[in-house]
Structure formats: C-alpha cells, structure tokens
Amino acid sequence: MAQSSLNYQQLLEEQEPETDLGALSKHSPEIESLIERLRKSDTYYLFIRDRQLFNWLDLQRDSRANGYVVAVSCADLRKACQFYRLRYVRKRGSLHTIPMPVVYAQVQQPGSPTDLFLAILSELSNPFTGVCQLKLLRNRTWMTLSYYNVSVLIVGNAHYLSYQSFNELVEIARHLKISVIPVGSLYLHEILTRQSKKYTDVANTFLDWHEFSSFQKQEIAEVVSSWESQVLGEWKQPLNLASDSAVVNILYERSGGQAETLYEMLRKIAIFSLEKPDLALNVSSLKSILLTRSKPTSRMSI
Image 1: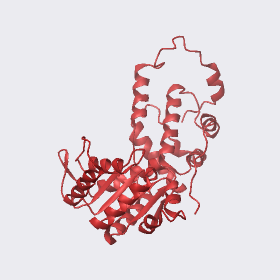
Image 2 (image 1 turned 90 degrees about the vertical axis):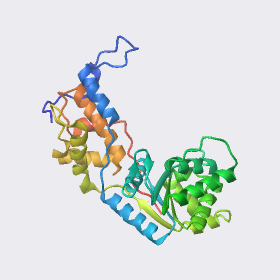
Image 3 (image 1 turned 180 degrees about the vertical axis):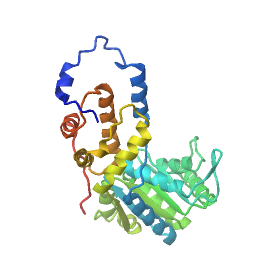
Image 4 (image 1 turned 60 degrees about the horizontal axis):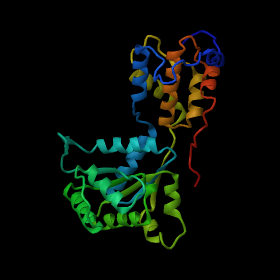
C-alpha cells in the first residue's frame, strides 16, 4: 500500500474543474485501459454458502421435491445458480448436449406466463420469436423440457412472477414430474407464505425453502486477495488490501457479506488508487471513499 498520509478530502478539493465538459475521459490511455478492465471485470468465488446451496439443490433434485430460494442479494444468487447449472450442463458448439438435467431460466418483468415460457425456451436453445396462443407456447415449453430430460428447473427473478405464472410452475412440476425451484429476493418468501386462499395451492407446492445467506467474515480476506489476483493481475503497485486486518474489517462491514457489493467497492477503491497513487489506503481513507455508501441488508427475518 502507498505510505503517504495525503488526506482523501484534500485530494478531492485540489482537483481542477474539467475544461471540456464533453470529454469522456480525463485519464491517460494507459490508466483508461486499466479502468476499462476494472469496469468489465466479472468474478465468482465459491463460498461456504454456495456449497450449502448446491447440496440443498442436489437433494431437491434427487428427491424430486419443489422448493424456493431467497437471498438479500439477487446478483449473488444469480451467479451461484448459473455456476450450479454449469456443473451439470455441457455444450457441443452452440447446442446443449442431452440429457440437460439442470435448467436456470431468468424471468424478465412483468413475469407473465409468456415471459416465463420464453425465458425457459431461450435457455434451452429453443427461442420462440413468433406470436402464438399461450396454450401452444405452454405445449412447446413442456415438450422441450421433456426432450432435454430436465430434472430440475430453477427460475430466477421469481419475485417478478404473476399468480398465473406460479400456477404454470405448479403444472410443470406435476405433469412433467420434475423439481421446480423459484429463486429470488426476500419478497419471494412473503409471496409464498402469505395467508391467502388464492395462493393456497401454490404455497402448498413450494413448502421447502433455503436462504442464500451472506458470506462469512472469515472468508473475506481470501476473497479480496482472490479478486486482486484475478482482476488486477500484475499491477505496478498492488493494493494488498487483505494485508491490513482493519481494512478487511471495514470491507466486510460495508459489504454486508454480499460478494457483488464487495466487488463494486473494490473496483471503486482500485480506481482511486490509479488516480491518486499517493493516497494511503487505510481505514481513514476507505471510510472517506465509501462515505456516501449505505450498508446493505445482510439477513432475512423469518
């Protein structure tokens, strides 16, 4: 880490105003290239919580049991589900090989039955671009799931799903005899546990649940080191954030144990380090850099 004690707020105040308001970059080509690399970085770390989720999903799949997963960070949960799918799915060229036991389909708003079926078909490399009746779209989805020998269907962004879409999932589970797992935000738990006669059959179909929790505090130093190694590579001036336990504690506290939130902060810190190489990366400067950042929710209350 840089050892200078320059104050972060002073550095901000010393910045000269831009003379060209239309300029997209104030950096040298070399710095801009590094920032672009940071901007496009996308990493995944296998936490204890991920292994717990995978074990739960394996049990649901093997027992042909339905259920749902909730998380305070849908971004973290999405990556975990995609990684779980990759453990069981293979491709030959642009096509999936058969059988394809695990499908992860992410629904877009507003979450109608049409949105649901199109998401599933797209994931199965069978996109539907025409316009047809819902009944025909439903039949095509069922036949495609059967053709690929799918044993577990994981539906992302399930908190978007309408009442009609939840009933479509119920019918898929019953008629195709596969495990169906909606996954989404904490609101999904509220939907599937609400005291409503209308939702009785839906709620009684998805009785098992799993919380994709925050990662543990003892994991964060390794996560930070892994991120620096993957994203920063051979920087001339490594950040070495994990070497300072006080800095690691601040990163854990401000991330709330959420990986994507942590990576967002690390990108921001790295860019400040590029722009101000004399800025000491310590508890004081990190608190200033993250001054206007709110802490995320860390757990659900049931």
